Length: 322
Image 1 (cartoon, helix red, strand yellow):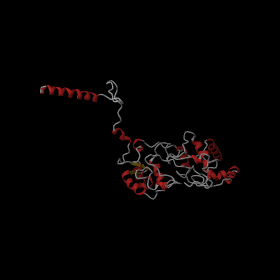
Image 2 (tube, one colour):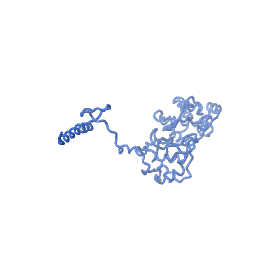
Image 3 (cartoon, one colour):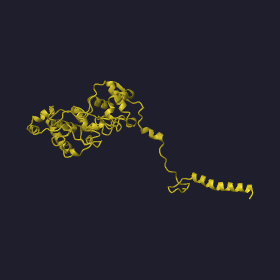
Image 4 (cartoon, one colour):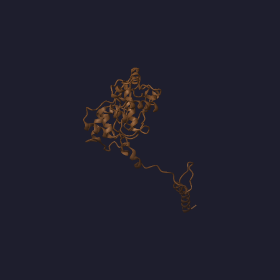
């Protein structure tokens, strides 16, 4: 066989092998590895990384807070956070600081951006002012102290940095604050109507008939960290987690306490009914000498109920030290 014929045969064999492979590579493959018809649509493509970046928190993106005349800056707040806060709330703000395992109530997870004390509807982000109030006031019955020793500008800066931990602050706006109407005049009728609402809304199932946090559902409740949590014990406490005034109690009732089983009753009761409930709940705080308690005890019915109370436990639940 001549050299020319051998060369032509080699080229023919090479073409027979390479060309089918090239054609096969251009055709979409099925799960079994066979070529699919050219008319079948190509499989859906995943979103490119650039589209997903919008929901990824950028710790380096500057954030601001606005509280009254103060504008907070995350760059300044970063230094304060890693000096005072990361030991409990964690290096990444996820509530997993080195102190967290030793705390009865876990620190707030800033990545989730679920906050208990707000003036905004349940499920929405709080106002900067709400976070500022929590830093200034501290959270009663928890390990979160008051940071009133910091300057107002320091607290505003801290809030700005805290907002860098969650992508929610980059994609959502805080909720519109609920309207808190003026408190009506305290009357015995208001207290009694509040007592009826306490039964109708089944508040007693968690808080107990005497408000001691020992209702039939109390021992089954857990928070957003799957930790057991007890309802507030009105009989043993005088200060609420999110404030001390009747207005604070009204907001707790209408906004709920996100991250806990305490729901919002904003869609269930009218504003005047909410105030009636506030007035009645004050009568359950038998250690807090309030105008509501004094009026209630001026009646034979109220005096008998209060004198029969057996105060026990801590403000966060009967017999539970949280």
